[in-house]
Length: 546
Image (cartoon, rainbow, N blue to C red):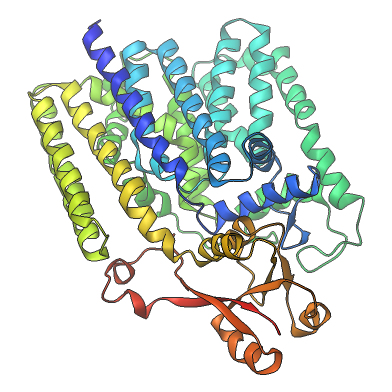
């Protein structure tokens, strides 16, 4: 094995990890990231790790582990955006390590390194370092469970324990459906290779028992908050069971679209989501999938490859058939996509290598052109510097990685991800986050009125304000509620423009500061263009009552 090639991949993995660190120092994005961060903040402020509160009320949706991990980080580093993002970032790196270990054991070291590089440099993994949700945790825990169960399939009992622990952690992040990518691949592998006796082996049934033992903390927390209190109003009704929601409504209810939280499904959604989420590798990935349908292309691969393919396939199919679809769900099976892509890239040679070398080069140039256009039209303060950095990194990748070689195809593609991460961290998101009014208002209030008692009037989604303002803001859903607290000293209210006239007229409200708002996770060309952006902006205000 060529040491130079494996060393190159290690250097590129390290480079991707280092530039990703830049994202940890940016703000927290609405809605989900800010919501999760505010939940974890409330856990620490209330010193209550069992009950989940949002806007001062009981909240039933996601399991607890995401919030426990963030709250633990807050305890160590303080309640900051950095502390919220750090655990997810470290878990992403841990996931890449597990991906390397699994791929190395089934194939070889080089395939393991290429898989880890593809995974860490894919667009949605990079974005998830900014917009931190639960999916990176699920990805790592499911991958760790698959790895340990793969080892347990070969021998050790302790791998059954480890695999079940990580599977339980994945459940405590998202719910029991995560067992499908964990066990689905193994079951289909056993059936296709006629290893029917595996289904009856005591160790796999023990694994299931251990999973439910390890998941007890989540069941206890849900039981205490909801099942012990049927009088609580959740989803507009009483008598809601947290345990039933956990085992049925949050999973099967979403899949069949008959639970309290509904969505609108499109069977092609994840096909086109993968095209952008897995950039710059998506074209190679789709070609690799088509390539696997030919029996001769699978002939030289270990039989255990079936675990990888089928785990990805059944999960992808499940997501596609579900009526509740969000782009970040695809993160859970990106490790399997990375392995499939790595195997295909490794066997490229001659004409096929030349074709994909050209495709990846054109893709790299297109990405740099699109990012440069965004920098120009958005009107960054230093947009010329942003464009210069992008062009320089593209030029360096072409000059350093010359020649028709597999490692050069991989290196040039990875360098585009490096350029993208620098662009997003240093130029793009710092400019876009200025339009997250809740974050701007919370920070301004902390700086200018440190003793203020923060509140929100007639607006349900002020999650970033929840996180960045001091303490736990009060929510007023009516003016009757506000009247009970209007005499409270140092009360400062965050409210949309629609309430400003009434506040000024009936309450003598003094506007302390106004803030521009846009839903920054739903970017459009009209917003990116500085000339048309003002047409889309909403306005929020911090007001003091007299």
